[in-house]
Length: 140
Image (tube, rainbow, N blue to C red; front, side, top):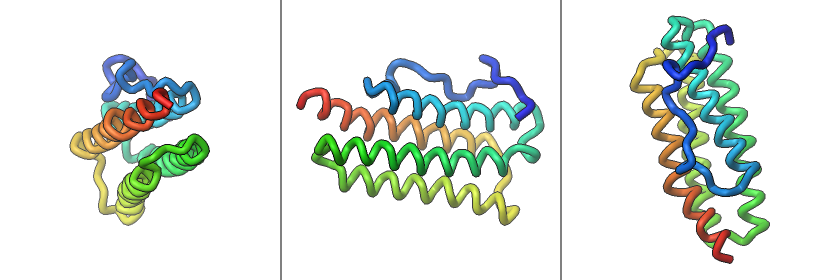
């Protein structure tokens, strides 16, 4: 990607409220946020068409990899709401794949609404669902 990330192009800055207190998970969440910010930077620079496909492909791969890692950790640590959390991951993965597939079929134009969806998709998941497991695992 040719566009540099600056504070002006960050749609989704990382902040401490997103930390679940597990270094590997926080680093992976930061990677997902970086991809969303790269996509936003491309859009702001008028380069979204050139980079959208690759970034969406990367986002799908990274999401699948992150959710797999997270689920293995949750399973090993006996998270009581694992089944529900897994179902949420399946839904979110499907939504990102749908965006990628719509782009491949020339049915997706990158808009601020798409960017806001991606930001809220990840932020809501981290703050609501991931913080729930973080709280449970810290109290065990």
